Length: 452
Image (cartoon, rainbow, N blue to C red; front, top):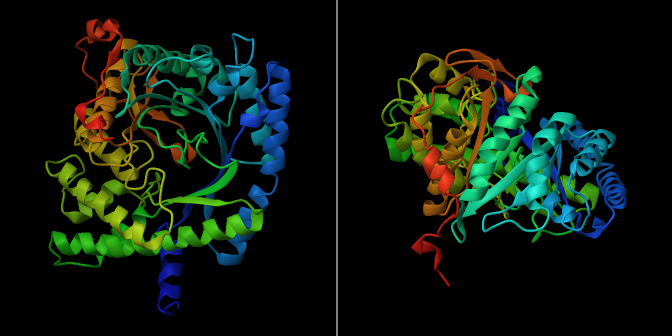
């Protein structure tokens, strides 16, 4: 039974503390759209997406009106397009991206993810062509997001792919330099990518997923921060317990929306991703939670410890609240999308080296970080390799979404608007890793991968 006290509390969370459903993401398998002719495959893709997702946005808006719960994004994720490109006799799969763009516009979704490749153990047919086409694909589309998985605990790290992705991130930023390098903000490089992630830019529909499925991503950093602000005198065990209870309440709302969307769309319910996903709005910041716990500024000594406790408590509370937890689930630290992170980076309290340490205990990795526009491709590749190594060794998901701010230097600002926010260009080491990256090959899987 519902406690009547929960009703006004939930209203306060939504109205004053930025509680929302960050995304309802409809995952769609495109395996039955494969065809040797790319035009036929693209037609099948458009037809299946528009048929399956035609009611996604209207149903989400209906749920918003009936329950008073904001659903910020409605999204689609699809089978990694490299798998479809493998069957086509074409060297340029950008037609697939254009088909996805048309489908996104027709269905009214905010983003569509899955212009992706899984190359952690090597390149299969279709992978090279898709990777090389990413800069053009993200230049000529507005709603399409791309991701590449270059490593895993089971497979190790494909350093040839890492080298290639450093060049592709730079090229993508250069092609969209007239739009604040927005293409690079829609491209993420993963280690241990989950197949049921509802969050962009890394969402794709894994081959082990059903034909179609509803995944929901919740948010609520402002709710956690507000709860901590009202609870003076707690020791850290008490802080952890309070975060768990708050995460439970947030996740229950996500479970409700997921089940309602599933029922009304007649599509199976997949998972709730119980991540704390911040926004640039004041009061909706993971960094401010860490400061509420006791740091003068995010980035100070103790930041990694506080983030580790926060992430663990969120997972513990969320798991009790939902029958199906998946995706990334924990705390996100995207610099340009978090008001507290933006402020900490501007003041110099938060540097990329500290962010890398924090990624060892957060949900994802180096996310939405502006770097100098003249950063060499091999430096970007080395940043990707460092982050992948953290994920590989620790059996966790890590990712890199950095934006070379073409024409800008350290301290200058780059703005994307909306949820992507804005932030300063952060300094990176200028010492060269070129020889390391040029070696190529595979970093072998760690010994802990042998669990069978």
